[in-house]
Image (cartoon, rainbow, N blue to C red; front, side, top):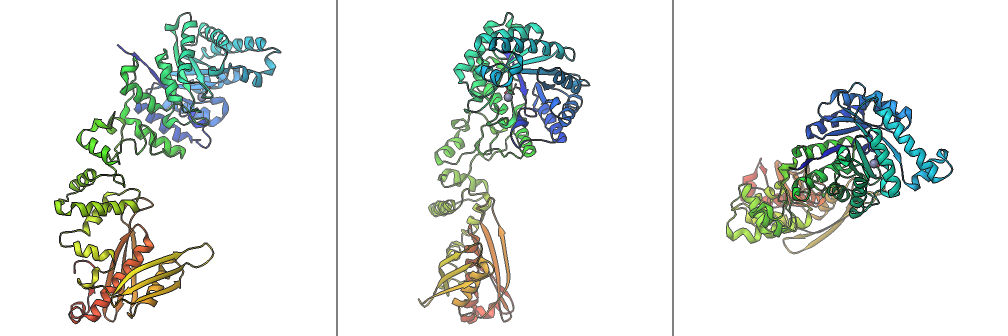
Length: 546
Ligand code: KIV
Ligand code: ZN
């Protein structure tokens, strides 16, 4: 049978020490409740001596959040221990965690008052640790001791201090790699050396606490587990001092997915990993990078054609765990310029489009053209792409692309051949357009305006011979993201009649120009086509399906 491993979450203490991550007391209580849903074993809720708000957060979590043990941090001074003990006093299941630095570099920089020589200072540090542990035991029988910067501590001294801590009554001994300096094999060896020097290692829970300065926090933690640690200290999303702490979600899923490598089991309810990550991200204002392992929005998405083909056939070809297991509702297949036909037609099928073989090449090509202009192609983009590709709309879709859909199948009066827009911060936008007439002549015009669209419309007005009034302009985003497609609808009036033009593009100025030319083509067609004039008299003529 595997050993249970204690998941010690320090998001609210070490995590909050990340520059800019401070959380309010209600936010901390909400996160602690979420950590309880996640079923972590210990929540390190704060460092009470450091502020009244830290004290209150610890007290509220200790008294209001059921499930995990609530832990408070303290240095080895009497005041610190009292502050932590009092903050925890009303809690039912509590732990007091005390720490002191043990590496020569820390001792040299911090403890001048403890003696003249390194040996004297080390001796004083041991005495302080022992005294603090004994004082902590007056508040709770669950006491943890940490040898800060153990990763760079002299091994013989580390052995001495952990022996003394165990003898004083600490039940958990933590070996922090405070500066993220260790490599996995080194950290494993360090933990092994601590196991070897404890007289009764089974009576002590040995703990990891790894920082991510070299990006090795998770790897070091897992190496520590293999070396005998049965507690891991970690934070949600890996937030923490400097580069952060080991990420809880990574450790938990590594221990779960690769249980064959570790003889331990966690009690974590992994389905809460992503919601907890999102809550912490919202409370701290630290976004989760899309490629973040386990909880990132891309962690279960596939864009490359070969991968999409693989996962559609057999999910496990490219996935070692399922999105649902970690509470992600991820879209597996994300469409972009690397996607293949399989991914595209599978999604179109799911959206209800039956694409005949004869049209597949052209649709795939249109998709690639769109994907070249957009980082990601969303369902709304596909729907609009297919809308312009309806069975009898092939011609109209083509026409729309060159502003001609409005001319009842005839040659459009105007085609937009060139558009250039110059925008600077201190001058009005400057625009130049080149329109080709159906008789082959070309008109090039320039204009300025309050904004780029107004300038474009003025330039187009100069280039066409259609008297008209612009009566309406509407722009809306029809897909997601900063590179969303914009749809423009323009109404122009001539006499009693109104003509509507539409266009869509990822460039909204381009879409505005196309829609305008499209409406003017409708108007031009109506004026030169008696039948159309009759048809549109007193009505609205649109670019689509009239
Ligand atoms: O990194 C560290 O050494 C710590 C201790 C207080 C455990 O956070
Ligand atoms: Zn730390």
